[in-house]
Length: 568
Image (cartoon, rainbow, N blue to C red; front, side, top):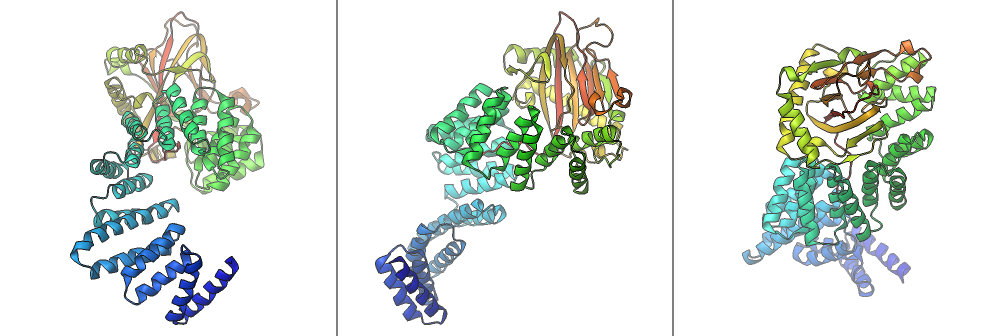
């Protein structure tokens, strides 16, 4: 029967093309006698009706075709055109209903374009839906979603909120508003929007996943794990929830569980580039550089725009001493004009290791850009910094976690500056003032560090607490542009260089001659601030004291390169 229908369809299409509309119509209708939902037969009959200037007769035929094949773009275009033509010939009493039907069609067609990643076209179609029927809440919500994905988050919030005003129980609108607020880094508000979506739809796995990502960003890791686990319980095959859970578990230091979560995400969605990238990060942290390299290469193959994967691949090649492959990758990034702390650091380190100088697009001589000053000379350090940090710690607003780089110390979770609290606002303001002073000081520099300094940036901040014997191992801040630290409490009367900050070009293993690894030793004290390129390796010298050493560390993060956690 199926083969016979296909033969009849071919004859019908041939007659249609030859202009034999009556013969074509009879053949299409003969198909529908056996298969009433046949999409091509319905669609082509609709085209015949339109050609006879009977668009109203075409509407149910196009709708039937769309019900079977909703992702066919031409079906939507013909359906929309037929509605528009029908509105011009119908009486006024039916125009309102047709406009509503047209707006729904625009909105649903926009969803198809959005799934195809044609976001600019989807935005235009959604705007048509809103224009035709301003009261259609779903169209406002969908437009808000597309705007958020296009990076127009302020406008996204406006449309999502309007959708909720039109229909307070529209679940998707609450979830989309949460996405917009997340993009605006108003995380507490975003979490409330996701919770509202869950309250309206308790099995909404996507909202649970988004809530988990948001709680992670707020440093509420246990709650984040619970939300991600709930998403998986509601929708076990939801790859992004497994990926999000992996991100939380990694932050909690549960490396093996995180690795398994990323692997689960990949099994469920083999083309999930971000999961490969995240798995690469876990393997890199575990110094399994060969396995990490393979996963970064897979991430790049799936998404060539993943610049961060290119940077991390460079790291893995360097750590495996794959000199030719390393320089091929470095040359690629230089030719692509890609600038980051990682490329800056490894360009310097490879010169130490292999003696081959390459153009450093980030910073050729990073030790020339190390600035150490005293905040106590310009601000009420005790009240602005010390008391407020102590308040945050005493109120347990930011929990601590173990950090592999720390010996006898802990680090807070999440971003200190995303806590919506007046205690962080003034600290953030002063740090931004110091960053601007830094930029002016080196304003004449031609190095990428200064010349390409982010026009818009966020601050990523965390606290480090160390007890006697504590130290920080050598590392760079791979996500940062400019790194810094404010010393909230440094035990006094320390012997020699103990407790001091060391910034250097590379690790001692990068050269056989320790004298060839230039460094600076900074004698920090309570009230000190140190600013330096994020490409510089840095570490602290162990100290012995009964007093705790507390440091506020931070990075300048390019606002145009946000965290890659997925929202839905």
